[in-house]
Every structure is written in C-alpha cells, then in structure tokens.
Amino acid sequence: MKKVLLVKLDKPAGGSQRLSYSEPIGIGYIAAFVRENQSDCHLLHLISKDAKGKVLHAVREYRQDIVGFAVRNCNVKASDALISDRRSEFPDVSVVLGGEW
Image 1 (cartoon, rainbow, N blue to C red):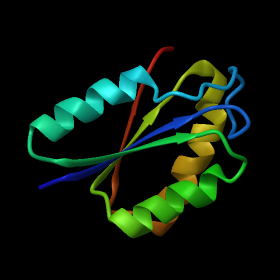
Image 2 (image 1 turned 45 degrees about the vertical axis):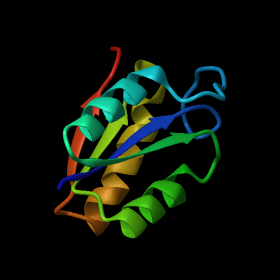
Image 3 (image 1 turned 90 degrees about the vertical axis):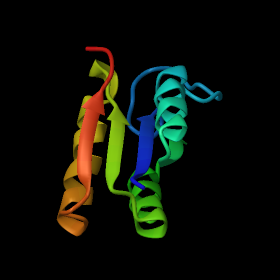
C-alpha cells in the first residue's frame, strides 16, 4: 500500500493568498480518491511560519512514498523551497505538483 502526503501552503506559511481555515477542496478530492484505492493519505494544510519543519516532521513520522504539493502562482516559491529541503533528506520519496497556474 502506498502512503501519500498532500500539502497546501497558505499565508503566512509562504503563500500570498488569504488565510483559509477549511481543508482545501482540491487536495480533499484527491485524498478521497487515493483512500478509495486502498492507499493511506494524510493532508497538511499549513498556515504557520514553520511549514518546513511540519512537512519534514510529517514525512519522517508517516514515511510517505509520495508527497504532493498543491501549487499556485502565489505559493510556488515557498513550495519549491520545501521540495528542495525534502529532497535532500528523503531522496527516495516521489514528489508530485499540481494546481492552478
């Protein structure tokens, strides 16, 4: 069974969009599909300044095979920084990007 982590960054975690206190619907749909297909899936909707630490902690704790980032123009730089940090520590974990461009 594959383990999947889906991440969405919001301000002040690095995105410039307004804060959203509900689960992002896009990664929620993806998580439902992943779970229906016999895989484990965790969601991280980050609105804190310690986004890097929280993503790295989640990957360490849950040992995901795949980490997906919901990326938009407003959070692409912050997402890229998290991906670079994650790649150096977890080179075998696949990264998937998606979202509105």
